[in-house]
Amino acid sequence: MFRIASMTKPINSVALMMLWEEGRFQLSDPVSKFLPEFASPMVSSTRDASGKTGELVPVEHPITIRDMLTHTAGLANSYIGNTAFYQETMQPKDDEKLDSYIRRLAALPLNYQPGTAWEYSGATDVVGRLVEVISGQSLDVFLRECIFNPLMMPDTHFYLNDADAPRLTAQYKPGDDLKIVLDDPGGAKSRWITGPKTLFRGAGGLASTTRDYLRFQLMMLNGGELDSVRLLAPSTVRLMADNHTGDLKLWLAGPGTGFGVVLDRGAAATPLSEGSYY
Image (cartoon, rainbow, N blue to C red):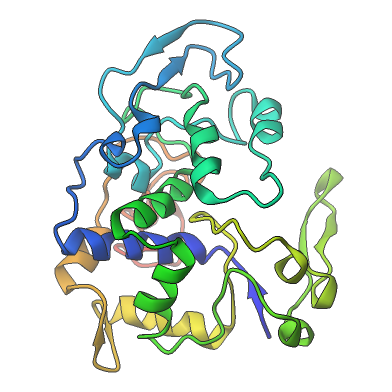
């Protein structure tokens, strides 16, 4: 069965780090080196994505690629600030592609100075666009040719064909009062089959099977290699599993964690071991 899950972000981060291993960029490089739309962002003193309240001040230092990978870039988001304006503005348009989607995101004021806080955002969409620009390939093609085919993940795609409809499960989400409601019916009426199939986002949208995604996870657990196919060096996997957010407060994961890694098992109150990453 096909399922939609939060698996797109780690796959896209791996894709970008594959390009890093090739020497295409440094983690400290400004994002604007590759995406000029991020050359002159402004920060809203009131976290207002519309820019209509408070003051707009220039950034104190450019947004770096590391900031995007760690959700410390300051991007406006759907969790904190003027979330209604953000959600309305960042709704994907018909037949939109990732380049125009990212330009619209870059035009919004930041919620805070880059590197000074942590807020979950669509930063991994920017990571996906960086993969496109640096590699010279669309994101779907790069992932297919450089990750899915080598790892023998034939059932992982951004969109599915009609023949796959019987295997696609329904999707649910929290509704009013946190009651579970249907988000996508699955099957032939699913947006993963009927959609325009033009927007390939780094932050979400891949459909896959348990078997396929386990192969990706095993590659990471095995230090970047699976069945004699190496995507990353062991040192790069270790770098990705380090804490890159220092002592910034992570309101989503809570105390005892860095972004994506368990630092203090007791403080995190988790059954996961210290050093576990996700």
